[in-house]
Image (tube, rainbow over the protein chains, first blue to last red):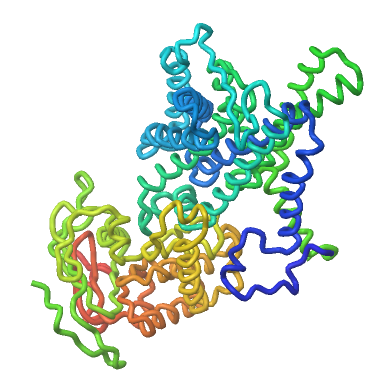
Length: 358
Length: 272
């Protein structure tokens, strides 16, 4: 009823190019933003932040990064856990080496360092494709985790081999360390998540995004119409790793506070991110959020339902949770291989015409 | 040296300029197979130049040499009065040579508009940071090039499908979108590899009209490969005929039609 293009005329290409061409979408987006920034911080507690919002926001950033590489540029990567580790350790080294610099700058610098590492490990993509590239990026995963485990310089020679985030503040309010208020951590991550989504959206709707998609859809044709495959692929690796690095830095500094690299950024993390991207929808920014939400929220929801609601023993609930999430993933991919984003698109297309079928 | 000054006027009054591209003694081998053997010909400014020949004659290989996809073992490619060094295909594209493919090579996951916009790569240079914040040069460039692309979309009459994903389109329209993508580049030479393959008569008529209009309105130089002899003879100003990698004829459609070697290649010749 309200979801209509009719009567909403565009008179300039700038209007036609905007992210949400339909009025209803636009307002919904503003409402979500206002809710996220102005309402949620006042009503959330420690549990909600740590169990739901922080992992959701941080994984969303990482999923956006991986989606740019896999979904937009078509280069499969299993190294994202390793790249998150680069972000985390870069952030840690920066935080401890330059304690006076603002943490937000450290997080962005960590992203930039990860981008450089990503480009390095993206070099094989110029020669190999598909599954073979995925295997090559596995090397990044294992090498990076090994590196951070074995070279004591990275964890400042601490006895445990762990790294833990010292307290840092933004505008005088602590966002890392034990004193952090839940809302501060939440807002800090939210700013990064929103900025990442905006940047990713702008890149993917512009020329660079078209180059990535051209490489994804048909690399030979892309080269013949003038896409430099070297630049396109490496820029995708750089941008993707930038976001993943930021996510890794936030994951370490804000969310967990202290990590051990093999545990936090193992191969499981790479797979988790890849699942998020596939379930959410390849080649969609919204899909990255949807995939992260699905894989973060579903376990929390199930746990609450089984343990709190039905009062089952925790261990039984945990195992059942694995089975249910796994089953849902399979069911879901059979029903809609293009992910949540595609369901969303189809729903929107139907809504536009509703109540008429055509 | 290249003779760029001289030109001629066609029967229908179009002015054909000097030579823009000259192939000199091109030989292309794949291992022991000689795909192109010692072929020379030129393409003049503003003309429609056809390359014809039976299957396997090396026509597509020739087009691939022009677009930089293959580098010939022997011979030189002269473009706009200078010898072209060995180049990557994307560098050739940057020089203003656009092409379409025998088997459609569109980007299936993108909309028609995005596909045609990819043709504008040569004209867009905003940096990554500018594109990330979508302000200043990036936004201006996007809108300016969108205007140019809309003209091409308008010209080829595909306005109604501009936001449709290419994967959903029927074959004939895909061919047209591919032509639009090549045209959007504002190429100095447009290469068409069998633009009418697999089309019915009406679609062929449409496509012929578009090719003539492109040449007429934008003055675009066109080199095309086509199997439909009626189309080739009607459209083209000059024709190169190839057979088994060799050039067996070159000249106006009428000359080629009367050439005994060409007739033999197409109709076969009695061996006694």
